[in-house]
Image (cartoon, rainbow, N blue to C red; front, side):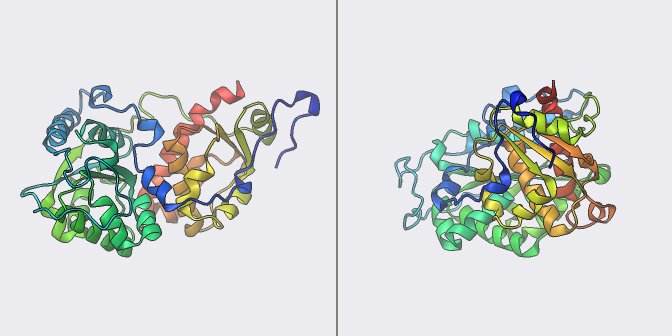
Length: 361
């Protein structure tokens, strides 16, 4: 790691993510199933459809109607959260589609629309849940399957961002969970990504999604959202990596910044469960990394993807030296089964490096 600035030039002493290994109680995992800070203000009215992509405006109208169709009342709970209750009152599952699936490429605004649906649904916040596929599997790991069914079964809406199809075991687990929730009357909404090279091949991701969830497919209406990645639409290229000294200086002059050697951070991530990465970022205003290198293996790469998602959710800028982020993953990784995750991480980290330019200025 680069040496810090001279004492007379130092404003603050940055923390290190490698020094953090938080404990996260199950109650927090449940309480945090809301749209992340980046999307707290997301509404249908703030979504700006691309005039050249009519599917975007169409999706807004369909989701508005879907939100209005969800009954926000819960007679059994009186609107109170029941994290660890005996279970929801059994009701007949509504007929017809109880879910929507947003199919599209990177950066077309699917998460914005999913968060807007959460906000527009006429139910108390404690009766709605929003989380990524990974966060949902982490919740099952923390609570157990049956307790998760009881916890989420009293909700009116469950939104799942970045539904992942690359782990058969997790896909079956979540598919089974969603089946139980549909039986309890929970409305569902999900997103995932179509690969950049597959955008011209029709409903690529939707076909995979509906096949993998098998018996649940009748409960979902698939909405295709076309367009280019808004994170890079009309923007300049991401800034080139800085040198170690510049990154260290910025870390010491940015209150709340962290400063870590990238290889050391990758090792540290292997010692912390991914469900805790969000808590690891609590209070961090900027992440400064020195000596960014290509990740050495797939397990390390997947952990880095989760960290990138948590930083992006929290709008934490990332300042780095070493290799640019589009060189993090090998060609073999970008052609493999987890390529969707890697492309998403590159897109999000690139956006965060643009946000970090002001730290240097």
